[in-house]
Length: 251
Ligand code: 13P
Image (tube, rainbow, N blue to C red; front, side, top):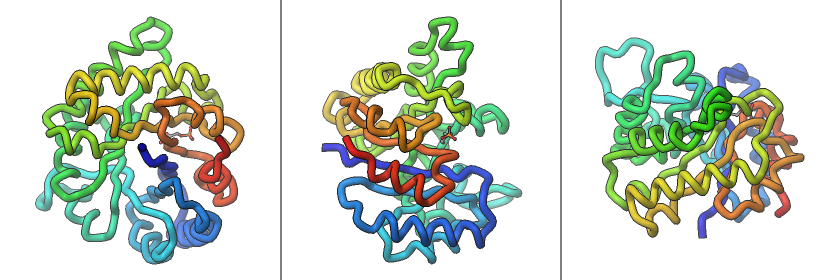
């Protein structure tokens, strides 16, 4: 059985003070949750304070990005060693906003992924097609390349421990969610590609999330799909009550 994950990607939102308030409120609301893992990914500068404020709750913590080197002359970057030291369990890698605005590629995703694993961080690797890919009918081709290049070079155990987030770029922050069936179809395809790379046993253990305009109103339908193991939530994770109702989805 794959344990569901509901992860909040706060993106570039919240001051440290606001972040502390949000995690404290969420910690109380998520306290009853036993069968779903709850993860929050605040901005780097709020991580330390959020981890301290959320200690003792059911929440786990992640970063939104990292560099692949352990230390050195890389101005402005944050290393996996630093995240591990701070108490992070997860790190988002290859979010479409990083690919779009900061030049990330499947090759940098692959380097970051392997670096994260060296420091016992669980990568949440994002893949997803753009609107033009979907309109051209090349969704599967695009996703296959992202998965085969970005997630290459692991052993089966490492692969099985990954979290993948399928985030169709056209659904992020637009209010347009992929239909439950469309999301299931692509996520099933991702599992099929992973089966080709790492075998069925490993692929069946990978948790694959959907992301893109997830809200309390659409989470149940998504979670009824056999291959969808949770959600990576942007806007709706910035309000504790709203995110808690996603976490407490009813199947
Ligand atoms: P929204 O939930 O705001 O559409 O963002 C999704 C996302 O990018 C999560 O990483």
